[in-house]
Structures are given as structure tokens and as C-alpha cells.
Image: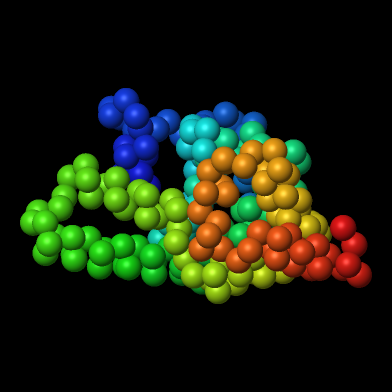
Length: 204
């Protein structure tokens, strides 16, 4: 997490700041509690918000869930934040971040063999890009979505919120960060339809 903060800091100094507004953090904790109170998580969650305009969120090994400020600003309502939160918890539970980290480490080993010592800032930037873009398989993304639908229903929250959030971003912000990595995800239209179908009795 600290390496990613530094890698994304364009000033090259201390790293991106985390958002520390107490009201905002309290709201995130409230959402986390509501989503996880019926879960038996092996690893406690550690939640951070990075002060960056990217519209994205990602999970890291060790139970980290990281939001970018840009995603929270784009959300119209708390249910949309909860939907993204639930999706990232799904990745944590399935240990998807650990798999991608190991795969990235393997890639770094190959680069080291080809180009010599591949370390320092270049290594951090490579890892940051790999983890944030989260090039999971479509099956892993679909699994995280399915986990999110169940978690949202258990918390009396609408699964359709993740679909409406993506739908609005696709129309209003075609260049937003959250959409740039969707080629590795199930088709956006399919995700929206699946989220709506997960509503009880097909309600939207």
C-alpha cells in the first residue's frame, strides 16, 4: 500500500495523501460494518481512501480495500459505494489480490532475467500498475460481483446499485479510470443486467 502511494504521487515526495475527513471515514466504517456483520472474514479489513481523482477501487493482499477519492465523488448515493465495497471484499475473500501479486512477481522475475536488475522506482511503478488495474480473469470478476450481490442482499442493500453506478459512469465519464480496465472484466452490459437480475423479484 505504501509503495503504491509513492508510485502514484506525481511530486515524487512522500506519496499520495490518504483522506482523513472524520465524517467520511465514519461513513465508510458504517458501510463496512453493515456489509460484514454477517460475514466470517479470515482477515480483518483495512480500508483507506487515496486522495486521487481516479475513479477506481482495488484490493490488496492482507485484507486491504482501497478507494480513490474520485470514485467516492462520482457516487450518487451510499448504496453505490457499498456495492463497490462489497465487490472488493469479494476479491479479498477469494484471495484474488494474492494471486495477481504472485503473478506480477513472476513477471518481474522474467524481466530481471531479460534486462538485469529491475528494482527501485521501476519495480514499484510496475507493481502499482498491475495491482490497481487488477487484471483478474473474467471468472474472478464475475465471482466478486456474485459475492457482492449476496453481501448487499444480506445487508438489505440493492444489488442493482453496482449496475446503475457503472451504467452512469459509462454514459457520463467514458474515460474514467474504473472503465479503463474493463476489458478483463465481463462485458459491462452483462454486469449491469446481472446486478438488476439479482434484485428480489427482479425489482430495480
